[in-house]
Length: 94
Image (cartoon, rainbow, N blue to C red; front, side, top):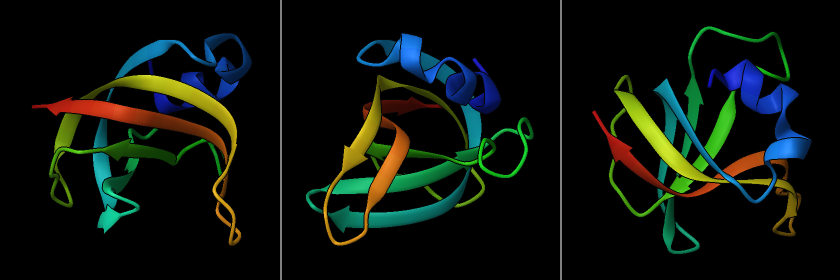
């Protein structure tokens, strides 16, 4: 899937495993016991072009990765951290 397709099909994909290839544009490690990535693949417009991913695997800015994880919608972690679409517990491969 593309990042845009993940957003477009989010309701149908909620709770299901998804697979996409995208570039790491932001990385925050060790937050709430996970690494948090923002990934993009050139698809989508503002609001549907940047997808958040949680993983236990390390990643580097600029890496293009194959991302496989469970899609979740409407996640609210409190303190203003709300995600309409999120891929959780992803595995990353090059």
